[in-house]
Image (cartoon, rainbow over all chains, first blue to last red; front, side, top):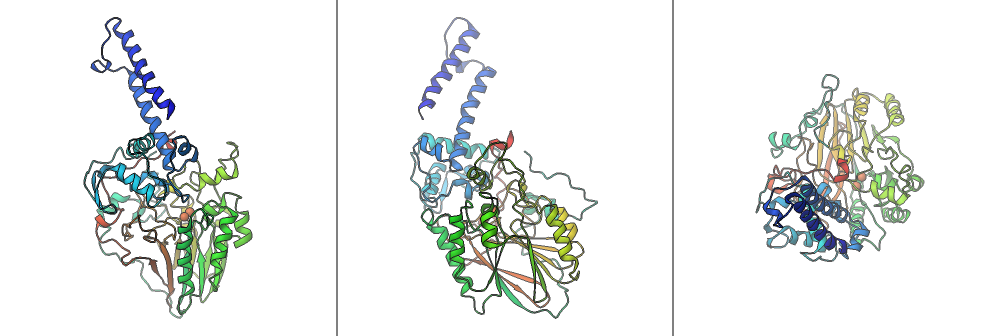
Length: 152
Length: 356
Ligand SMILES: [Fe+2]
Ligand SMILES: [Fe+2]
């Protein structure tokens, strides 16, 4: 995603300016100092933007798929059709031995398995923007779940 | 949004326990103990035994888009037709199409031609919101309807056509409206499932001429009780339905939409949830009736797993016995690890748009 790359330096720069204004003189590393409300809000916005993109992908939005150059399904089906509210995606259980794959797997492995098998779509870059967004949406929807790695 | 259901007046309505406890309740009350129906079978003798078949939630896309859903619908249809002795009739319980497309409905009608016994139909939301039921009603007839057969009054309801208009003010196209309604956790449809005032009146007068102790079977796409409103696993006016049904001692509701094994009893009303042929929905985060023996967790890599159809046997006492024709050996889970109904560590949040 083109403007994603553009945005992060902008936020960093913004944070830098805030910091600079706050301490007036010495340039230093922002993360060593107390966070301002604006900074925290900026971080939150970056995260929630990814959640919303992930939500769109998860619900099969064609424009978002096109923009991120992914094809998550060739059968008309979308993730949310089997997983309303991301139900039964169990991000809190990963990594774990995943029966269908017969291997020790991460959530990203499982996402790609679902894209490839039930959805008959095309696997996505495990470190690419679509995967990160899907992960953001799934984790956010399950943020009150209790970590339970390895559980079947 | 909070899922805790609104405080229902306990004094007015005899609520089933399942309405008061969510999945936590279900866990505490032992979903995994063997369950039996709790309504006493003490109906008048003298009726006749017969069978009828249920198919629903085929969710057909045009053939070129998705062959699997066609194959699964076809398998159910062939199995119904192969019943020996044959069923007396087939009820198709809605969601024949995925996006209400006349091409999808035509495909469904074409596939169903293979079944030669009597067929009756009720609509699902996926059949409705492209053209507001025009094609559906033309092809399969309008609901509600009722007929009497071998001492049973059968009723078919429309529980899908009463969505609040969210599309006009947003200037949405018919396709956009359908797309929203076709998303179970969609953010605009709201509490669309309902019987509606007019149909409630109709139901009341339709049953008035029927003996209070005689068997009634009501087909509806959505369950006629409150299971999980955010996914319309209910009808919003279920209290009104129950008020009407209260005097009748032998009512069975058979419903689709939930794509899963479900069983509930509220007062004298029994409620049985049907499988889809297309795909199973996970159990909702709360509200699974404690009388439900949960279905087994299925293999998402196996398209024919966790789906199927049903044979219902009406015995001479007027009791409906349901047999899930799920395409696997075991239908029910005996332990939490084999079901998705009981992961106490999973806590889900509604979608962003639902929170605005
Ligand atoms: Fe359905
Ligand atoms: Fe439905």
